[in-house]
Image (cartoon, rainbow, N blue to C red; front, side, top):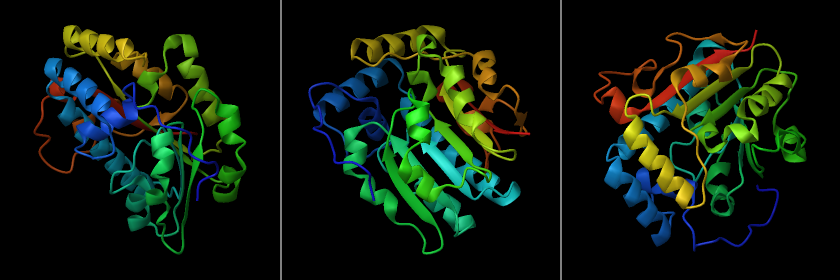
Length: 267
């Protein structure tokens, strides 16, 4: 189910979620998104690798939290347009009783949210329309309360989201407020694009997104590590996406992936 009607979709300007859909080879985007995404690819051809590795990190982090840390609940903010396997499918393949709340503020995501609702009989999934910049409204959503028990551990999943929150919007304060309501044993799984390996190229990517009306702030490893302040980082700590507990040979280079990732547990 969803908790609000879809708003009109603006097809005159590119949107980051629809551009990401294009990077992943999806079909839920418009010509304006394709053109913007191809402009990014013209300066950073490995954007497709970055997107795939971001998705793969989410899959691995979800399995690790379910298998090794007893997590049975997830709050996935900035989930984007559904791409199978979705987080709940990964989690429920390990623990069928897993409960997942997806949150996003893009109307196209809302339009396709029914794809997210195919839960196992034992588990629950729902979608709420919410903005990470308003954590109080998100956490106080009745739909969230119907699915998640905030007295039990929850994994907060922020994949390729926080680089869309500039320093002026208080990104660290937002993550702190989200984590503050979660009990001990909860987790943060986060991925974040970085200019560390190719600053010139990533400045060009920044300019493309900003000129399209989507301000971004890509951060260094040290700045990404600040999101995990007070948490116990799982091995291997803050790592390039394809090097966080890889299933096999990472294959891609660090510069191609340009994505810092980590998973931390709240003491």
